[in-house]
Length: 392
Image 1 (cartoon, one colour):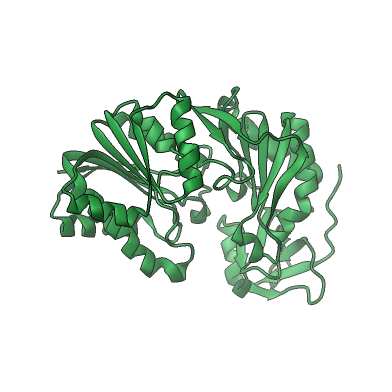
Image 2 (cartoon, rainbow, N blue to C red):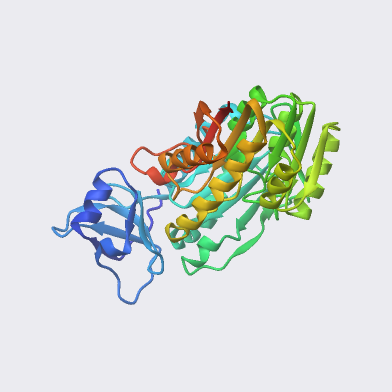
């Protein structure tokens, strides 16, 4: 049993100690009382003012999130612990591992593997190591994944701005094995070609899988899918609608979306390249009406400081969508901005409904798919909000 060498300590303040004891896994820079002055260890022992050992954590001197707790107790974590947690995370998703299926296998803190994400796309894996400590563990994680899952290839998708906040480079590429230009996956009877090396996130928005299935149950008539990306929502609802207009600003995503539509014989889906805000305004001026609208925008609020401006964006798209819907029309609207809470999102919906002079029924409140579970002690692990609304 290989034990990770831990030679340095970090002392946390009473507030930091309380945070960890209450089930959170992060300690922020302002909650650190003492840390290494010169060394930059990947892992440290965490102690309180009385020198009680709180556990062992991934450490990053450059990050606002200074510590990410990997294990509790007096004994340093081992390679066996790392392997056991990865295997447990995979086992929890065993019902999602069929041929051609895609899912999140490891959801970082929620699976007690801080800042480590693993997604599976059929016989290929995508790995993200989003902190300095996780980066140091990358070779061991990749080896365990090879032993447990026997993939044909592993892609590294560390091309995220969050890495720069850790003092790390943004990198991506094939980490091991061979990876095709496109990987074909199946979701709800629909097939998609996914670009693991350059697609959004790790290639596909896996966290919306169950919401796409829900949207399909409510979809009907003339539908509009905004921020369509490569057509995941559009192709799901197309099977229940007479027509679907999918709006996306990225020409590359539009091209892939049209290809995915052809794969599924979805000739009732039309892709429109353009800015969603402009498109919604134009549709309103033209007097266009829809029976179903889906709004799945990118995170408008990427930080707390950008929340005020983001609220305006969320309100506008929802207001205009409400004006475009026929009576009893359905609006499926989402926000993946953690900094916008569910109550704040609902407040925006109410404000938009008032300004649009529409009454709104809340039919469902939804979140991210079950392969993206929430850790009870960490509200940060619940980030996706999705409402199914009926516009009266």
